[in-house]
Length: 243
Image (cartoon, rainbow, N blue to C red; front, side, top):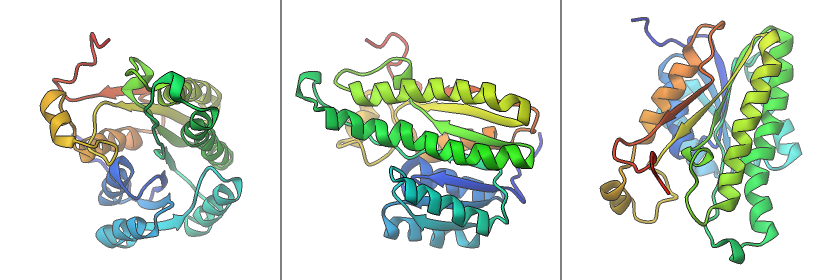
């Protein structure tokens, strides 16, 4: 089996300070890639860089702001000599509440980060990748784009939208060598769980580095192959038949 190798490849990972983003950055760096992560928490970003050495650098950025996205991609172009091979749209958030208790602001806040910011980054990456003759965009979705949980209208809507965006971008990118895919994780260890051990016992909980393995596989495929979508989840998670 061919060794996973990202030597010489450049990548941006949004939301790279914790959870799946942190693990993806580490996996890409271990495979020889040069990674630029972004997020709003400088301490977390610095921790990722210290752990992974010179292969990972960071930019403090709130990608819901146009100017911060401009800054992120300007820094990427400087550090990567104008080239970008991989974008991982990982940054996201969730709001859990009964529908009748939600505000429009609650809804718009989730959409702004999970969908609009992903589009902003994909748009910038698309332009760079088209000019250089190809590249790869990986969106981190969720099994909630297939079977939502209750009390999750903003999050479920955002992940359905991200899935649709992936398919549209994949179609538009096909003729210019841009592969676009989406990875749908189930329950994954992260800060969103208030009682991780209970979730682990009842439904199962994956380590984030296992999700990163799947992202690395997507990223390392030959340029003429795209894994359009993948779903991964703990074996005992009640996804099939969930309702």
